[in-house]
Amino acid sequence: MKRNETLADRLREVLLDGYWIANTNYKKQIQSITWEEATQKIGTLNTIAALTFHINYYLAGLLSAFEKGKLEISDKYSFDLPPIQSASEWDQMVTEFLTNAEKFVATVAQMNDAHFDEPFIDEKYGTLLRNIEGVIEHSYYHLGQVSLINKMIQESKI
Picture (cartoon, rainbow, N blue to C red):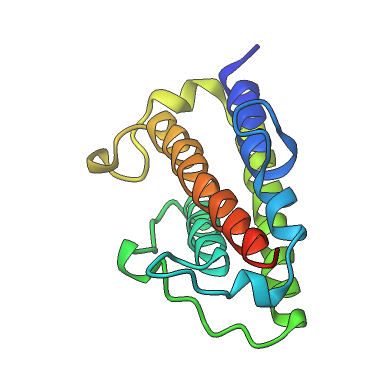
C-alpha cells in the first residue's frame, strides 16, 4: 500500500469510521450527543464542542495550506470557539467538521508519495509526512478527551 493510502486510512479511522485503535471515532462521538452535552463544562476540562472546534480548525487550516501553499493559521486561535446556543449551531459545527474531515482524507489519498518527504510550506515545519502524522496523533489525543468527557457527562445523568 502506498503511503498516501495508508495515511488516508489512518485519518479515516480516527475521524470518520474507525474502531481499531480507540474503539470509537470523532464522527461517532460528536453525532451521538446533544448541543447541551457538547457545551457542558466539566471542571476545568475543555468542552466537547471546544475540542471539536480545535481539531476542525487545524483540518480547515491545513486544507487551505494545501490549496494555497501558505499556512494562515495560528495555534493561539485554535480554541476560539464562538458560543454555541442551539442545536442548529451544534449541527452546523458537526457538519463542517465532517465535511473537512472527509476533504482532508480525500486530499491525502490523492497526494503523490514523493511529496511526503518534502518540506511542508517551510522547512521549519518539517516534512509533509510529519505534519500529516501529527494530525493523526493530535486527533487521537483529543479523541481520548472527547470520549472521556462524554462518559463523564453520560454518567452524571444516572
